[in-house]
Every structure is written in C-alpha cells, then in structure tokens.
Image (cartoon, rainbow, N blue to C red; front, side, top):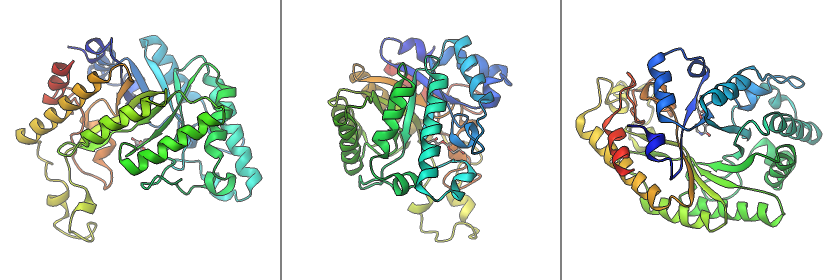
Amino acid sequence: PSLKTIFQDDFLIGTCLNTSQIAGKDSAESNLIEQQFSAITPENIMKAHILHPAWNRFDFELADKLVAYAAKHRLKVNGHTLIWHSQLPDYIRQINDVDSVRQYFVNHIETVASRYDGLIESWDVVNEALNEDGTLRNSIFLEKLGKNYIIEAFRLAQKAAPNTKLYYNDYNIEQPQKRAGAISLIKSIQAAGVRIDGVGIQGHWRAGDVPMEDIEESIQEFSALGIEVMFTELDLSVLPNPWDSNIADIGRKAAYRAEMDPYSGGLPDSIQHVQALAYESLFRLFIKYRDSISRITFWGVSDGQSWLNNWPVRGRTNYPLLFDRQFKPKAAFYRVIAAG
Ligand code: XIL
C-alpha cells in the first residue's frame, strides 16, 4: 500500500529529504520515496547557512538539485525556511548594526524567494518565532528589526514569490498559550494586508503522549482564520526527554545510557504497538479535518534518518517514523494505512 495513494483525496503526504537521498544512493529508499510520498521538504539544504554561506555569495547547487529531483518525480516542494534564528550563516554573528541585518534580511528573502518562484509550491517564510508563552522569541531579527519583522518577511516574500504559497511554521503551537500567540501573529499579518496562506504545526510529539485535544482545537482555530493547516515535521519519539529525568548531569553519569537510550538493542513490540495506535488516532483526526488540512509531512523517511537519534542528546536509538532502518514498513505504517 501507498500513503500518497490512500490519502490522495485528503492531503499531500510529505517527507523531508537530504542530499544523499536526492542523489538516489540507496535504491530501496529511492523506491520507497517514489511510492509513498507526494511532497518533500529539504531537511537542511534550503536553510540560510547552506544557501547563503557568505555575505555576498549564494550557493544554490544542492537546492537546485532538490528542485530538479522533485520535478522529475512529481513531488511538491515546501521550501524550508527563509527566516529562522537557527542554522544561520556564521557571518551573522559578526554583524551588529541594524543596517547590515536589514540588508541581509531583504537580500536573502528577495534572492531566494524569487529564484524558486514558480518552481516550488510553498515557503516556510518564518520558522519558530514564538516563545512557549506566545510572546516573540528573542533573535537577531527581533532585536535589530523590531517586532514587525515577521510581517516584513511575508511582505518581501509576497513580492518576490507571487506564485508561491507562504506559511508560518512552529512547534508546540497546538499548546494553548503558544497557539494564542500564533493566532495573533497571523491576524497581524492579515491586518497589514499581507498574504499568509497557511500555518505549519511541526508535530514533534511523544508516542505515548500526543496532545490530541489541543491538536483538534488548533485545527479548528487556525482554519477559522481562513488559511491552510499542515503538520509539517511529524514524528513520534519513543525515548524519554532528559529534562523529564532525575539524572542531573546526563553527560557524566554512568546511568545515562540505560536510562536515555533504553532501546538500543531494538524496540519492544509493546512500544511499537503504542506508537502504531498513536499514529492511527492522529490520522483518524486528520481525516476528520481533511477539508482544512492540506499536507502531512513526516520528518524523515526512516528511523535511521531521524534527527531524534541526536536530539536533544546525541547518539540515541530512536524509532519515531513509519519505516525502520531497513526501510521496511513498521506497525505504525499499517495503522496509518488502516486509518485512510
Ligand atoms: C533539524 C534537522 O532535522 C537536523 O538534521 C538539523 O541538524 C537540525 O535541524 N525544527 C525545524 C527543523 O524546523 O528545521 C529542524 O530540523 C527540526 C526542528
């Protein structure tokens, strides 16, 4: 069975991809990508540190390859991301004056957004601009350009990429306080007469602890703003968070491995099952709101690719996705198909 086929009348099904995947290094994985997905997001290669490595130099080589790969395989591309506080080029740390930050900001958005207009489906124009309490996150952009920088980013993107959909993307915006912040942010963009087409809820959750009610309320409230709702970086971790642990200094304690990496020898069936049911419930909810939701993107093809093997601590063995390290479908895959 194929995810993109089962859900073709409901929403796009995406994955993030890296350089080795678009180069087709592993044929089992390439086949899987072609069979299962209708959309892609570059996991890293459209981030500023890669696209804009020096003050006056852009490097579009990898991004162009990704766009060509997508055209060949009929995949919609979501550009990720124009303005974000993280994975910025190093020289940003050296610029302190408002004029230089503004120059970077305008140049980056205009150059990148216009290059791919008509070639990609959408941009995450701004990523992760909010704190957990719904206020604006401190960043070089907030500090130097002021609180209207988000509206400005969308205004510049709209001008440079009139044929590309423009999205705001963030994590935990299903949580009530942060969600309220996102809603007022979106309303402020709309009130300024600037186009915003959708909101991406990242969807990095824990398999045993998916906030279903918050997610449902979020779909309702965001779609009431007249914009598309997407789940853009979906994965369901099976590992404990270090901050939930009573090990104070995880770096030095001998107990760290056992406690923080409990499934290094394989995932027990019981946990597979919990994860599979969590994915099924989520997809049943997504189907219920199929008229409001335009895309569900997984943050990786297989467990081996997942960033959650290295976050928030390095070197763990996580199993957050639908395909295992040999690219075989997991229990979660079959439960998602059953929901379709
Ligand atoms: C992550 C990538 O998956 C990693 O490969 C990279 O080292 C760090 O960034 N929120 C986002 C994504 O918007 O861009 C992040 O991706 C995961 C969290």
